[in-house]
Amino acid sequence: MKKVLFVCIGNVCRSPMAEAFANHYGNDVLIAKSAGLAPLSEALPETRAIMEEVNVDLSKHVPMEYDPSLAGQYDIVVNMSGYLLPGKPPNQLLEWDVQDPFQRGSEAFRNARADVEQRVMQLILQMRRDKKKKR
Image (cartoon, rainbow, N blue to C red; front, side, top):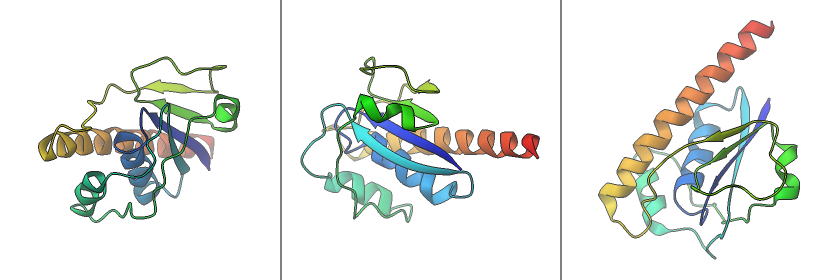
């Protein structure tokens, strides 16, 4: 199982969506967590509601701060913050340019959700292909 960390700015929109989709669809190949460079104190109701529309539960999400000293514990770190991550680069770093929906309304949240879901699914499929090659 690969350990994957999704990072955005506040850990209340994009990275929790990615974490939830990854754990929902890819629990056969990965364990996902998420964090933010400047996490907010609590999860956004908008994010929870948008994810509930696709039957993915975010009710237990608590925003966490990105700790550069722990990045090396992950096989893959996915950066959606738009900023360089502080500290030593992790084992494998992916940069995803996903629009931040924060304070931009339901349509922006749905667009971000669709983008994140597609990217997470591509990552999971690649991990499954890689796992088959190693057998």
